[in-house]
Structure formats: C-alpha cells, structure tokens
Image (cartoon, rainbow, N blue to C red):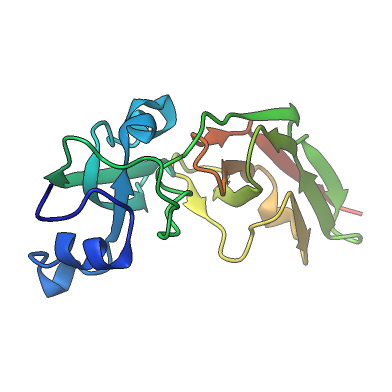
Length: 194
C-alpha cells in the first residue's frame, strides 16, 4: 500500500500535493491509473506513468499549447476500478478519444460598409464535448495569439476596417474527455472598400 494511496480520492490528492510550493499551487494535481498512462492522448501531454502528477499548460509565442507534467508520486499498482472523484478528464483522458474536423474555416471577404465576417469550423470528438479557442495572427506577423472570449465553433467579427485585411484566423480544439488537441487550417480575412 502506498503512503499516497492507490485511488483517485480527495484525501490522497491532499497527500500528493503536500510538498508543492505555495507559488506552484495553480498547477492541477491529477491521478493517473495504468489504463490512462497507456493512452497516446496522455503521453502527448508528458503523462506516461501511473501515479500522482502536477500538470499545467500554457500557450507559447507561436500559439501552440505546451504541456508541463511532473510525476509527484509513482503508484506501482493503482486501483483503476474505483470511481473517479477528481475532475481531471480534460487533462488525463480515461479512454482513447480523437477529434476530427469535417469543415475547416474558410477565407472571408467583406467590405468596410458591411464590416462583419464570420469564421466557422465543424468538428466532432469520439468522446466528450468540444472546447474551442480561436487565435489571430496579424497581417504581417508570424505569431499566433488567443482571442479572449472566442471559445465557440464560430467566430463573429464586427467593426472591421481596411486595416483588418490580411489577418489570419485558426482554432485550437480539445475535448472535455482529454482528446489530443487539433488545430484547424488557417483562414484569411479580406476587407475591401465599399
């Protein structure tokens, strides 16, 4: 029997996070059993062994999601039959899950009198609900940045001007079941004079 427990429980989570510095408490503490450790979705995040993990993500300057996973405690024989109590499925997938994009965002054209455009994507996940994050790249830029509040399957833009011509848009999609992230194709905005 492990000092930190073999099950996904709040008591065992408290034991696992005991030695984490207060400044690092924003990290999520998750429990991974043998089945979860074997899934490619979790290995992609750097989670590749059973036990208690400290985990967080961030968006780098290129707009890509980066994963930081640190194994806190290895559990040799985790109890995978116990009911899960931690809400960590978006981090550590329980079952294999994949996202497919059936309709990619398309280039959009408008004039400065209409001054509006909508980008949309159609996607599906084998398990869980989809989580969207639209990103923007300026017309002469090379870096992607998240658009605050743009978290649905479509992105409606208003108040567009000629200066918005050439901006590029894409969407990152994950799922509530921990599917590996996919990124859509890039779509470009063109605004012309009315």
